[in-house]
Image 1: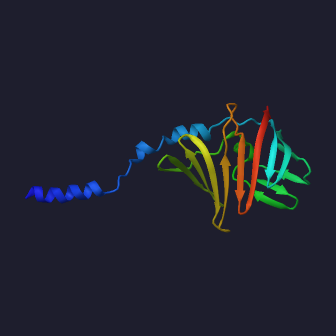
Image 2: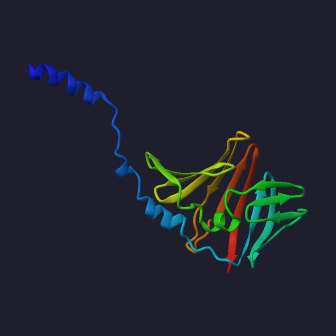
Image 3: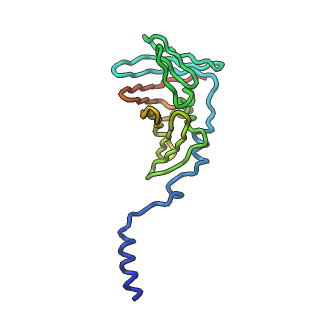
Length: 189
């Protein structure tokens, strides 16, 4: 009698989808926060590189000194950068993090919620204006997805290879139909 009950139960269990335990898939949040929330970001620096926008390739210099930002791009008019926004002529765009944090990889605040799927780790922070999700592949930053629920818009930041000196060599920004690629060639402190 017990065998008749166990056989169907074993058949059902053997056909059920396999679910990995969260503890085995997700790394420790503290280790991730130490990698991407507690990074040492220089207070003064200069970054040299190239901006790519469609067919345009423009050299640029971006600097921070005494809490003031300077951005110079060849053949481009008035550009202003602040801790929370970027302005081109009279139009401003909110930044998901201060620009130096994106460059030097301080992309977590430490209060994100953690979830995992396969080998990807999702760290989500719900702010007042938008929801920001940082996606890690293993322990390496892959992308940041910014969603504005009021406007139903999504933007994405894709992180390239990280230099041993602690900055991303390439940062790709996607918004609607726009794509801007920032290739960093040199950083001086």
